[in-house]
Length: 152
Image (cartoon, rainbow, N blue to C red):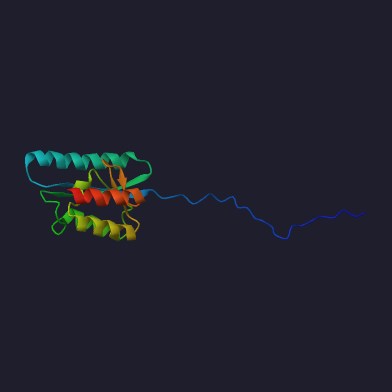
């Protein structure tokens, strides 16, 4: 009796190509102080240094830069040159994640804050507020940021 070889109707092929490497998240920091006083200047420098070191220390992150506004109130974004440049760069696809030390250092005006976070979300740009441990693209983060923005 001859030997019969069964050939499956579907042949699966395997490749040995390496999986696509994930690119690092492009991360920027944002620092802001409200006044030009010497005390606030120290805070400003501290925020810039803090963001730079934190971003550079994370192996999954690529440092973009720290955007900053000095001596400007957080109640609106119209005169925030650093903030507006950062948002423009994020909307252009140059930033994946923006890190701010505190929610109150981002924007104090709830309408501007929520509007900006929503615009960034449309481009898959996430905000991370370090002290409060809030990521804006997760559901818990969205709720917390809305509440905290309204308290300030």
